[in-house]
Every structure is written in structure tokens, then in C-alpha cells.
Length: 110
Figure 1 (spheres, rainbow, N blue to C red):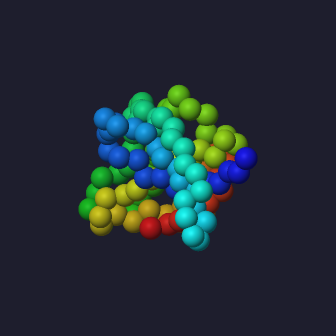
Figure 2 (figure 1 turned 45 degrees about the horizontal axis):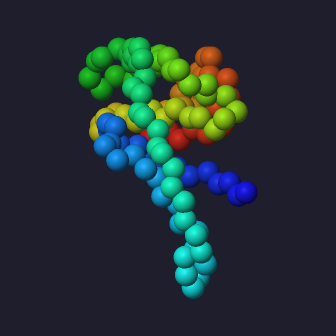
């Protein structure tokens, strides 16, 4: 049995045919394949952004959400993407504080 991690960008809504196909290949040919049922997308409940809405202001933002899935050692992650024109920072020197995020493995400021 082999395992790997793959970054997947899910669609914006559930799709009608949600079957994943895996093909094992050598340089010469396909060696085998398999398929698996996908997973349903569940919107995060109670997702909120709280910040001072003032043009050109640098301000702190609070992000709150709940999820039915555990985000601990199972490889889960949360990604925050901002609309065009906004800049986010997860640097402590900019005032970032993870509060109750148990383990932040990586952070890319945009």
C-alpha cells in the first residue's frame, strides 16, 4: 500500500458525478487503475469575518467558524483567501495571533 498527499481544489458546489479515478503508470504503459466515490462538500457553519471596515486602514480581523470535521493530525487545513485589493498577513510582527488554532504548520502572507 502506498500513500501520498495531494492538494485538491474542490468545486464551488457538489457535482453530479463525484467519482475519482486513479491510474498507475510506468514510463511505458498503464499498469492498473481504480475508482472511488468522492465526498460531499459541506459549507462551514457560522463562518464570520469581523474587522473595521474603513478605506485604506490597516486593521485586525477576527475569523470564526465551526466545522463538523476534526482538523488535528489528520492533515486538515483551513485556507483564508482575500478578495483582490486586500492584503493579509500572518506574521506576528504585524499583530497576527493564532488564538486557539492548535498547530499552524505553514502560513503564507498575501
